[in-house]
Image (cartoon, rainbow, N blue to C red; front, side, top):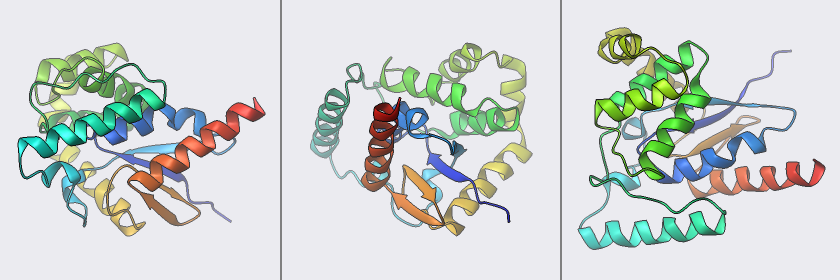
Length: 199
């Protein structure tokens, strides 16, 4: 009997996905999570990044995430000058990274560019720096970003996530159950803590 993979769905524009990603590898245990780049804007529930009504709401959100990062013993968050930013090109690069088996290292490098380095991923140069960190050739990355087939694969991944019950990010899909948003982060943190105790 085939077993559906455990999915970790993410968008590189979302700092909550970044917090989850920093712990997702430690949450894998005997059943690794399959990292799946998903377009947050294509999900049924309005992204928290699209719902800010004013600058004060953005600042409150950033302060809350900064507290969570400290609680999780991550380095201090550095916010890009433009936040939220358009992650479209970076997500296309992540989709290409998945195709060549480098999803995790690219996603980690890109997340750290954005939220540890404060560099917005709507700038091509910062996407290419993240790609170079995991030995992805810049010309191949640029070609993939411009390719209609890459865009279709990202759209298909988003549709797959929706079909598995994903409504917002980050998300984990385990045993045909989708845990989304804070629930996903909590699941990852609990699994990571359990694995640390076993180790």
